[in-house]
Amino acid sequence: MNISVFYALIAFSALIVGAALLIIILKPLIFPLLWAVIIGMAAQPLHHRIKKKVKGDILSALVTTAILTLIILLPFIILVEMLSIEAIQAYNIFQEWFEKGIYPPLELFKSYPLGKTIWQNMNYFLSHFGTTTKPVLLSLSKRIAEFVLEHSGEVIKNIFVFIIKFAFMVIALFFLFKDGAKWGHLIIEIIPLEKKQIDTLRIKFHQMIYAVLYGILLTGLVQGTLAGIGYAVAGVNSPVLLGAATAIFSLVPLIGSTIIWVPVVGYLFLKGDTAHGITLGLWCLLIVSTIDNMIRPFFISGKSRTPLFLTIIGVFGGLSAFGFIGIILGPLILVICSTLFEFYLEYGKTQNSLPVDE
Image (cartoon, rainbow, N blue to C red):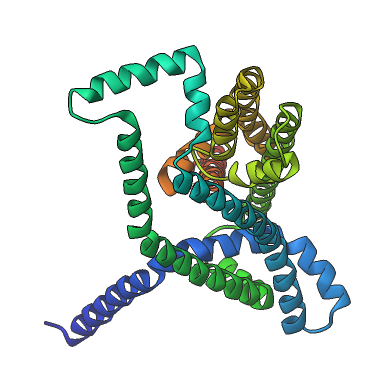
């Protein structure tokens, strides 16, 4: 074997091994890194303003990162604090119910004719097994409590992992603001496209990121506002807090705002306020939970100047493939692919228009 060929194979093998190791190292952090890139690109106007007022790349990057971190964390901190207070109060109430052996929601359920009939039939059925409904419910509640305690360690572990990934995203944001321009120029140099094509691709890329991020925020704001109006009309306590919680949880894929409004509707039914329960349930089901499917694609399509159908495919396809970040990645991937396809068509037309040598 030729020695030069042997060295080439060794170099190629080392390159493959290095790439594989790089993927293994970056795999746990790929999504935080992608979020840092997306947020960093969307916050470029803010960073440019800060950079004009704050001298120095390091200091301006630090200020921008700190502001964005506060913007992201502050609503969650306030909401978690409020929910913690509500959770402690709820725990004390449930503890009092268990000690006294009195369960107001259960008594309220049995006060209705239908609830009373269901309760009696359940007791009759369970009497064949030598028990009644109340001990079964107590046993079930104890098992639920045991299940929660058993999985509390896993929950704490997931929270710890989330904190690590969030910290990495913040660090990555800082270095993107500090050195992002240099890295951007290096990437542009290795892309095998003309400058005009690169500029077109970059503009569409930025437009889509702005459209998707602001579309998500706008959708969450609208859903939270509509849900808060529904809570206020239904006479639910803390409608502003619940509306804010609905806005935040509307960002969660698939279940979204139902995490908040379904328990609220159930509370109204247990409370005996059937009319408000039905009204609020229909309002949230038909308006609050479906408004995002109308606002988000139209907003993203309009701001990014992308066909609506392509945007819908990107949002839902990306969501199913990558999770929540797929709401952004899906449309971005489709925009990049469609733009590259347009470049290919333009190149084909140019080649066909060239004169053929005889």
